[in-house]
Image 1 (tube, rainbow, N blue to C red):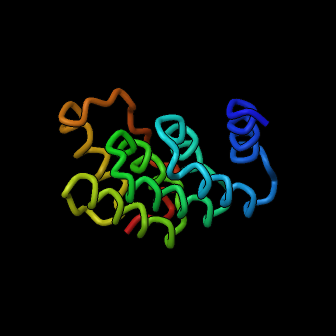
Image 2 (cartoon, rainbow, N blue to C red):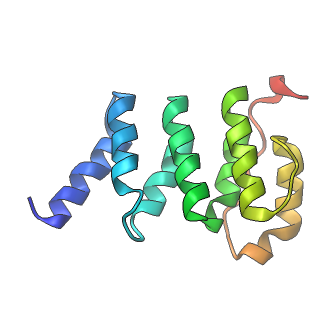
Length: 133
């Protein structure tokens, strides 16, 4: 299979496979690829499997993907308590700020500082208000 065909196969597996183990392996496989990996990893922040989300957060943190900041904040609004810890740690590592995993605080901070990161991604209102701290 040529490179384009390989990439399409992995991309399809990451975005559509029902088995979380396949999505995890796909993320692992692309984590050292150049450029094209970013959108696939960012898309997995909304994955239904928490293990896949954690792998995406790990890759974002390790690769220091600054454009992921608003995506991480958005993910905080819908994450389980276990995943919010990893998201908060990644946000702290990327921004130097430490607001713990409080989506609303991060969203307010992002609104005031997003120009420093040159991103046009808007932060959405939290959908997980039942987990207020």
